[in-house]
Image 1 (cartoon, rainbow, N blue to C red):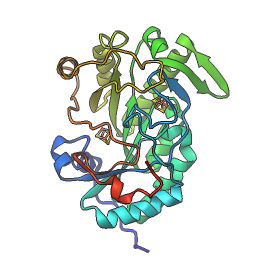
Image 2: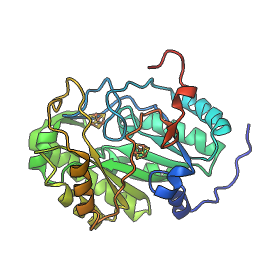
Image 3: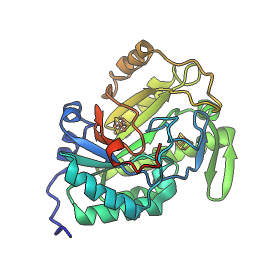
Image 4: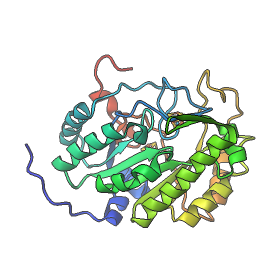
Length: 292
Ligand code: SF4
Ligand code: SF4
């Protein structure tokens, strides 16, 4: 086994070498998503749970789930074969924090092996207030939270339900609960120096005119970057027939929001098991024969 070395990279250096946070690094460095998180604790109206979480990944694809131990073995293989692998992310196929034990195990195994890896975790934010400190202890430096609304009236149109502490919430109660946890969780992370990216799915007629408000609120909390994404409709989801924003419409929203907070223009809406540079995914080379 490899002898662990002391971490030498600062969070600023990790940000500069992260292909999603620094456009320049996207052409140089690779990332790997570990598909270890199958469960989710909310239901977004644009999601069908047999597919990857569209909050951070490409919807409509089904990724095989790995155990934390199998993910660690895959990491070691990829690290050997893929040059400039700097980032390990957990982006589903469900929610990283709804599968916290698996997330914790995988990150611990990898950090013990390679303390200089950058850990990046994506979540809907529901469990952030409970796990923000754990993420910091696990050496996570970058967290993505999907925030689609900062108004529960709008949120109620986006979320079918939220499962929290043994109860299922609907409507505005669900949206208020999710929002409150997102806001307090993001604040906890930022107070500890964690770099936070906000993903927002553009839902025409529902939140498109509200996204600037979301971005302003996130700027106020100290978030680093905003990633405004188009909806990719998933068959049989409640938003299957929603009008899709054109590239021009998305870019116009990004340009407007860019006056408040740095915008990401190069997101590839990757799979939950993506591997490689953003523009040259090599995950197929590492997929088992039975995977789609
Ligand atoms: Fe689907 Fe992701 Fe929403 Fe969960 S958080 S319902 S996996 S889109
Ligand atoms: Fe980066 Fe977007 Fe891919 Fe996430 S989905 S790894 S933010 S390019």
